[in-house]
Image (cartoon, rainbow, N blue to C red):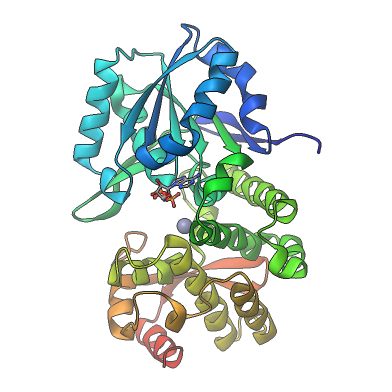
Length: 366
Ligand code: ADP
Ligand code: ZN
């Protein structure tokens, strides 16, 4: 083993490295000395992750002379709220966190989004380090600088672009992750391949049901991070290309909105990926064989290959389309989809016909 991968991310609002793989935490430790000159660090985490990984992280930081004080939230999406932000910023004030300080987010996407947003607004902005502990967060949400909370009006309605100073995606965090969460994160790796890395898809397809072994998963994760880093470097604020990262998500968000809490984000996205390719094939944009390969691989990966396989169904096509029309990424009542010309070649398709999508969705459900 040659040690963890280092993936540089450079955007207009900040440049930082992602250290990913086995030994990432230890490899990052020397950088912490300069980030925490007072020899103290606040670690924001949730009760689940605290029980599993906090001691190891504290130990690694102690090795380089940094003492950690944890701020531990309850787990779950409910923390990504104004009251969660209020509690966290109060805790930071109570702990004496000052301007110029840096805090650590140790956990999944919830902890990362919440802590990142707190770091963006506390004392008008402090630094933060992402230590993503789910595959979903390692592959997707910890990279790209988006932070935020949910409101009554919808998910991630309030937030800020606030890039981390460093992302530490240590492979050992994933050892305790339930298989269903691992599969959910895999959907985002697959998404990256389908948007713009056909060679990655070929490797994953060839690995078959070996995709979840570290030998296959870790290099695939690094490829997905590299891919996302490239996209956000070229289009941080989603003026164009970054919207490609929504492949599978307009369909996926509709499933999630219809049956909240019943599926993982990755399960919803997986079905969305299958639908995006089948719809592309039906429209003549993409070979049917590619859509079939995507669906087959999703089944191999233990992920939904269409609406019937999404937990929380059955779904109503008209209601799903209504959700799609109101997705926060759409404007003026029209639907923008991300479609594909082939595996590894996605494109943005604005102004799609809602009735046609509804007919298509009906044809995809029993
Ligand atoms: P994501 O949005 O990345 O899926 P969440 O923050 O919602 O992440 O985390 C999903 C669940 O998994 C939460 O209950 C969280 O406490 C738990 N969790 C996070 N990391 C780990 C881990 N490494 N091992 C076990 N459970 C974890
Ligand atoms: Zn996603």
